[in-house]
Image (cartoon, rainbow, N blue to C red; front, side, top):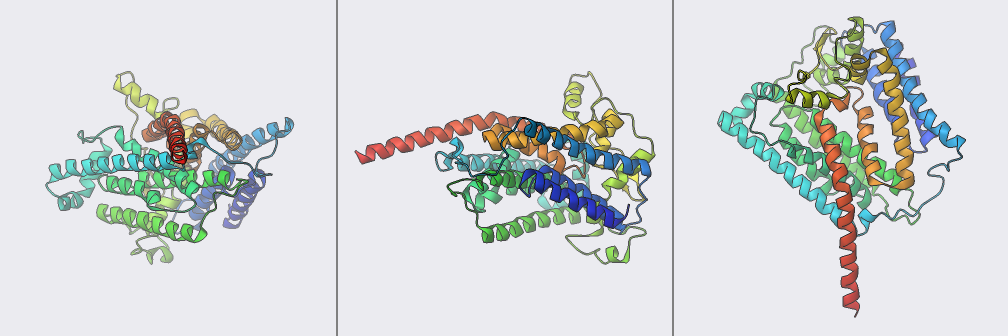
Length: 447
């Protein structure tokens, strides 16, 4: 497929998303941008990638159409029952979570951020005790990474690392509510950056960044429709803070890459890519990460797929739990690698769907994701329910990570979503109580 055709289809998907959802940030636009961008980068062939076989193209195209049909199913159903279109008129956005002027939300972000910072520091203490010093930990970055991958370090605190995702989620809401980026927008990222420096990985950095962006932008979609225009956003502040946030995360990711000593000399790389060898932001290895997954999926299909238990990747946490009971073997932490002609192992979320459910998974998986996400989209903007919002953000993460893996294979996806759902009713109760106390104090002062 030509690069021009990929660009046209991607642009059409982005514009169709805006037409259907009346907002630029929606899951159809996002899916088109992410998967279209992935294919576009692959087809640039800055590395000597193999051509995608016809059957792989068929699965890629049919999965996009299935995702689109899932969206259209819900929208058609709404039109059939004459549901009122969203965002056609302003509303009074008065939420209980903001009844105390966001104080409970603010202190919740601080609490969970501090806990995640404590977790990160504890991990460093464990590693320093193992290797003797911070310098020794950095020198042995490759060994540390393998120990983490093989889960051989038993002294790390469990469960609490998921608290950073609660902080990130709430921080996105708080930033949208306040109308500007502040220290609380960045504070949760400090803990995850320090923690990832003990793992020498970058996946959780990316996951946290995507979660924050989704939480912030999806909530801004709601607040922008407030009839009282109480939630105006500072564009200058947003531009400056966005640049600062990306610089912080790129610096951390680049440091991890240099510490682990990533390989940058690829046989057959184009002249343009070789010139980026010393680039800290877009190096050959970064281009490989951003473009290779569709090539892995192609090679996986060409090889005839793999044997996997039903739902092994999509519902990895279930198999992990059963393995603890010695009922089933523990699922592998990482997928098998393929030579494309570089060795890499992640092959988009389509690979997991195909491995778990066969061709039917590539048909019905994207369809169900599109259908459920669209239902959640309308449900949240009509009811303004925060638990629905949590599901909307976390199901959107499947789309956000679709270029890499099926994000539900990560245990922290389930754990953090569960913790968020448990905490949100408490947060609203705290906010309501604070509001009542503040009102009573005002009445007493008036008397």
